[in-house]
Image 1 (tube, rainbow, N blue to C red):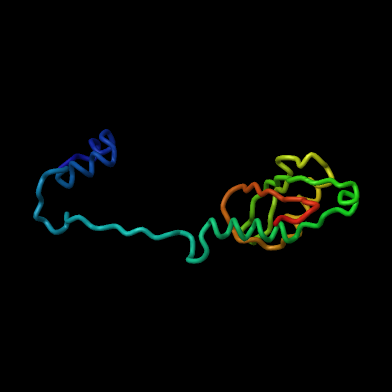
Image 2: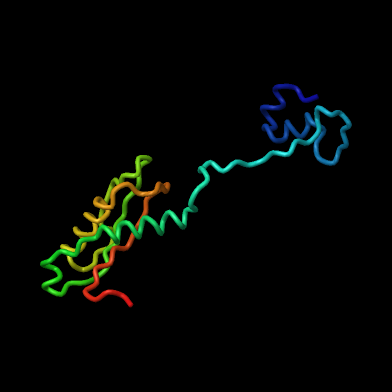
Length: 138
């Protein structure tokens, strides 16, 4: 038996090993039998993180409005927007993290995130590219 003051000095892990007999010592007492511990995912069942990120990118790109003046001037590029998603699905802290090279496209990319509506929740700050192309991809 380990005395209480020794537990504080040894630390919890060492004290438990000493109290329960330590590794390699057989103990027939059923109270000291090993218990298998299961794990539970803290996120409810549903789409994976990769699927949620793909959906976020899709919704933001779908909400993107190409500024008419930028289109007339032939401006194109990809702006990267950084933000986080609250538990309510609303994006907050929206800022252009990498410029497309044109301020008007960078502001339009930020508006795209705001216009996308409620987004699937993902923990942490995200960075999403928003493309502005004059000709659609093939």
